[in-house]
Amino acid sequence: MLTPRPRRTELAGQALALRQAGHSTEVIAARLRITRKVAERALANALRQMERSRLALAEAARGLELDRLDSLTRLAYSVMVDVKAPIKRRLRAIDSLLAVHDRRVKVLGLALLEKGGR
Image (cartoon, rainbow, N blue to C red; front, side):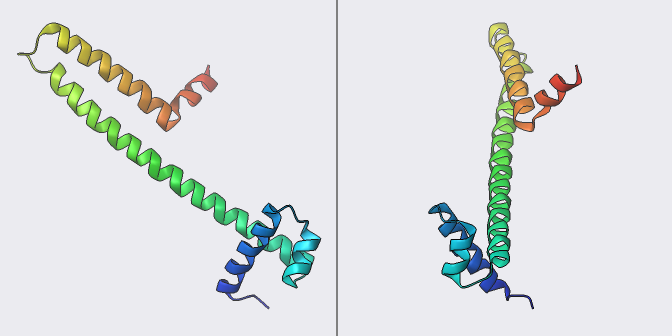
C-alpha cells in the first residue's frame, strides 16, 4: 500500500534530518517507526527532491546570467556600430563583445564540449 504523498514528503524530510545528524538507516527506521526499506526509500526520495531543487536553482541562475550577457552584448554592439563613436571606443566595444562571448560559452558549458572534441 502506498503512503499518501504528504506523509511521504514529511517522512523524507525527517529521514534526511536524521541522516544529516549522522544516524544510520537502522536508527532512522527505528526512530520513525518504519522498516529499513521504507527508510532507505525515504532517504532516496529526499535526495531526489534536493537534486531537483538544486537543478532548478542552477537553471534559474544560468537564465539570469544569460539575460545579463544579452544586455551587455546589446550595449557593446550599439557602440561598435556607432559610426560617430571614436575608433578606439569602437575597438574596445569589439573586445567587450569577445569577452561577453567567451563568458557565454562558459555559462552554457560549450567550452567543455570544445575541449573534449579536440
